[in-house]
Amino acid sequence: MFLSDLVTFSMASIFSGLGFVAVGIWAFCRKTPMHFWAGTSIPAEAITDVKKYNRANGFMWIFAALPMIAAPIIAYFDFSLAITIFFFFLPLTVVLLIVAHIFIYRHFSVEKK
Image (cartoon, rainbow, N blue to C red):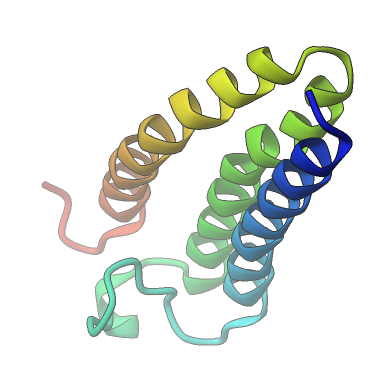
């Protein structure tokens, strides 16, 4: 393993994780309901408690960032394990984000489904 590989992987992983954390912070700060899909919006009338809904969305995004932020720490000890974790959790994280958002939306929806 070359040091440049470790540094490149660490930077990419940390910046990816920080992007997710930024979306989480954005969700905490919003006054209107946080949307999930690009180009969509959720009317405030469709959500029972916008502040709690946005807080749940923020925690969802920050929780999704944890494997990306932890991967460089693992890479310091075992680079191949870190790569495996990163590329295993990346697609899994996308699926888990979709499922988590569906549960959050249904929980805070005015119209219970």
